[in-house]
Amino acid sequence: MLQEYFSTAVTVMPFLLQGFLETLKVSFFAIIAGSVLGFVIGVARSYRIRGVHQVLGLYIHLLRGTPFLVQLYLFYFVLPSSGVSWLTWDSVTAAFVSLSVYTSSYVAEIVMGAILAVPRGQTEGAMTLGLRPMQILRLVVLPQAMRLIVQPMSGVYVMLIKSTAILSVVGITELTRQGEVFMITYPSKSLFIYALIALIYFLYCYPLLRLANWVEKRVAGSLAATSLA
Image 1 (tube, rainbow, N blue to C red):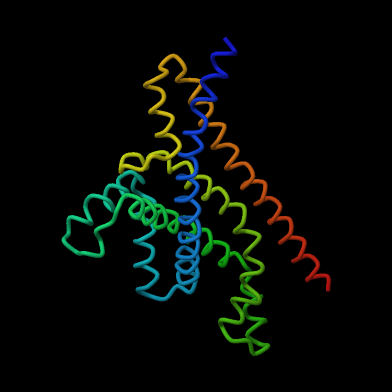
Image 2 (image 1 turned 90 degrees about the vertical axis):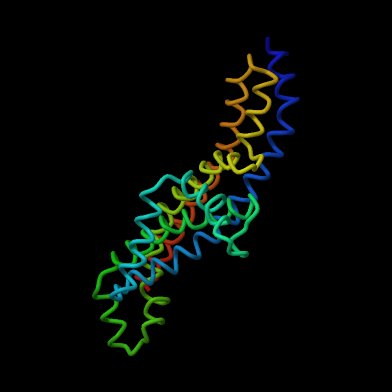
């Protein structure tokens, strides 16, 4: 029995790792792009500029209020049919854009909430010292907001990584899709193959969560040292 499972693992694992590399590539770049876009939106919303705040809020609520699968279909099937040349994407580009946009909606809310959680007195004190708005944001607000951003952000990244499991609907042979192909060949080992897929996802996500804990402690420690100084 063990020999059968070992033989199946040896046969399947190279293809699962190939699918994992596709998952890694798409999720890695989507994390970077989604974080940058979400950070900019979150900072912009924290200033509560009339009009801008409402428009960006609508953007966030539409993305967070609809399933990611629907958004993926929109970017891959609907937008290219609009006739606009630069909206005609291949499957990888559509997956990257949809994941990035979806992630940005969650990152924006985290960033805005963290910035607004910084006591107003910190900003007022910085203004009395003659600091400009961007200096206040960079030197006073963001360092304190970071300790509130890191941990929730890791949860968003794990959510994004798990969302890649449905990218096969647009033709991307990612980790889960590779496993499903072999379940047709080895139907009696389907549960075992799912276990291998889950293990690979875990080995990808767990270090990310541990890194977030480490960064959070480092940020908290640096803030404590600064306050004591």
